[in-house]
Length: 108
Image 1 (cartoon, rainbow, N blue to C red):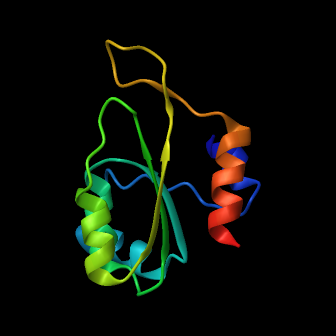
Image 2: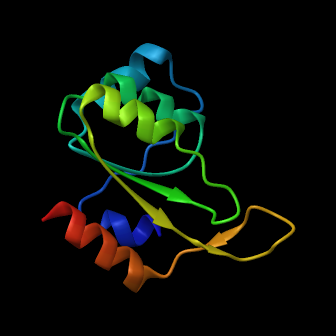
């Protein structure tokens, strides 16, 4: 998925070893964020108004907390349900064609 999105101009960022200051600068400079649901999306609070956000979910676990943050700071939020690959884990499968459809409609 990362390779596919990079061909569309997206840049993969691993926030694990970055300071809060570095993370805030990345999110503040982003026009669009595509990410799986997780704690790193707390950084949405640093985005400029109107930033587009596509959050991926495992259909077994949907949590609206980042939608709420996005609403509070004026972001253009959408979500994408991946397919559950294994009911005993949170591993998911992303159909690239469905991903393209979701992102292309959202980014127009």
